[in-house]
Amino acid sequence: MASAKKYPLYKYVLAAIDTSTIAAAYIIALVLEQRWLNDHNHLHFLNVLYMAEAAYIVAIAALCVFIFHYLGLYQIHVFVTLAGHLSQIVKGLAVLVGSIAVISFFTKAEFIADSRLLILYFACTALVLFIVVRIVAFRQIYLYLSRNKVLQRKVLIVGAGENGRNVAVNLFVHDYVGLQVVGFLDDHVDVGTPIFNAARVVGRTGDLAECVKRLEAEEILICLEQIEHGQLIDLMEKTLPLKVFVKVSSPLYDIVPLRRAIEHYGNIPVLGVFQFGMSERKELYKRGFDMFVSILTLILLSPMFAVVALLIKLNSKGSVFYRQVRVGKNGKLFNLYKFRSMTVGSGDDEERKKQMAAFIRTKRNGQPIQQSSAKIVNEARVTVVGKWLRKLSIDEFPQLINVLKGEMSIVGPRPCLPYELEQFEEWHKRRLSVLPGLTGMWQVVGRSVVSFDDMVVLDLHYIQNASFVLDLRVMLKTIPVMLFGMGAK
Image (cartoon, rainbow, N blue to C red; front, side):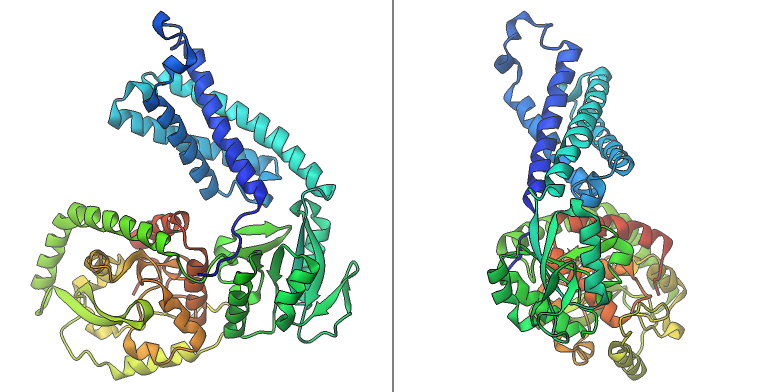
């Protein structure tokens, strides 16, 4: 599986600094509490720091890095600010300290936190250290090195139109980003044409690999405007074997940065592209996580399932569950399970097929649309109970069985119907490269108000950036969507 570089060096350095800071804060908290001085037999540092306590320090340091990553504290536009940086640090520490309190309550382990005073010392010490190390020291050192061209990466911009020029201007004005534009690639502008600040068009998009090597570019910024979705996806896929950082700033991806910008280069939101599929190791981890979540959820919700089953039987004739053939990973067919929400009738709804075909073929011409729906439903057949099951997405819960069987994942692109697959363009079919999901990007970002192309872009964005953190984001954002029935039909 080809993949691009994921994170620049400064992010790893910052993660190492955060790990050390948390460890130092905990050790200082122990000293302030005088735990080590209360026992004369354990005055020596190595005798006090038992293996369990050492493992615990490593664990909370890793948890801190995870929380900070989730809150965007490793993104340039966050850590170069003052107020925003401090605000996110306070938020992250609040979550970390809350997690420690919960762990302490349930484990009753003395080495975790045998007093509230220790937790207070740790929280205050960590906050002071992060302000000194992150905001005062690291921020100033980073700004100095980037503005003096020490921390600087060469970037090749694909697209010499207005979008590409705006990105170049932002990189020049906001020099803390640390990117030097070494040239532009464009199929419609003559080679040698100056675009901005001495940077010129150095080749065509087909010359990408050669230009990256010749100019020693370390990052590619795709800023094309007049391009079809399929062409953009093909180009992005071609960048991955080059082993450079790959970012996208394109109107075709507006549906993502409008709601969840990965990073900002100045005022321009850019999205990372890391992969076009998951490695076997990632798939193995994801499968283990899916098994754990599905088994736990099925056990916890089994009483609710019994009540739902009874209501369905009392409300209308027919079985409790509804089975439907769907398309899974790599085009493999499987039976998807749902709680039945409609009256029993013919499964071949020709009108729905025509509507769905028209929906898939509808283009938005680069502009988000607000009136489309990815869920075309015959409202007349929806039962009274089914209406609420659909609104709260409870009808989807039996798909946890599909997850257990390995046919689906908790998070991923929603599985399509066979007749929908017949309408797909080639670039649409890339969403079939991973297991379909119980929930996905479009459920929490667009739900029922995006075009089909937008929906596929969201699915591909997930595939390109799939990780445990992204899965957790999607799962957490799914909860309010379900509770408030946003966009469900």
